[in-house]
Length: 151
Image 1 (spheres, rainbow, N blue to C red):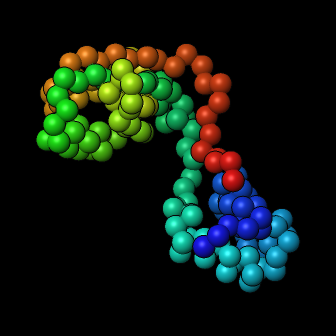
Image 2: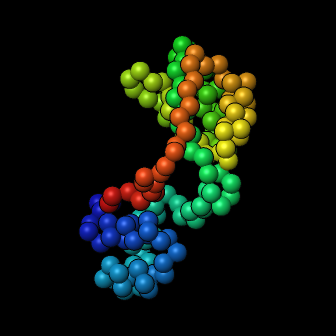
């Protein structure tokens, strides 16, 4: 499926508000309700729309602290990566875990209530996975945080 300008406008609109009605979405992109519904369905079927979610304010649920965990390992075997991937997938504080190029091996983004909560997370992680070096940086201010992709 090739995206045309209308598909891109639909994707942009749904990223801003996935609860928008097909009537309103159709008005916004210049299609009838039914044509808009068919386009959205085709975008879902083709995998362009991976899911629809509600964005929760982290501070309101006591997860105000964002932490970036920078990990270096001296083990690069598949079993270590499997253990690390399993641990990060199973720990709900982890929002993203990335294998990196360059000097850093892995970067993990997590949300916790405070530094004490981070320390409890860290203690659980090191019980599960051996690491050569682990360093945390705490976000002081979020200048931009978005889920909207430029389509």
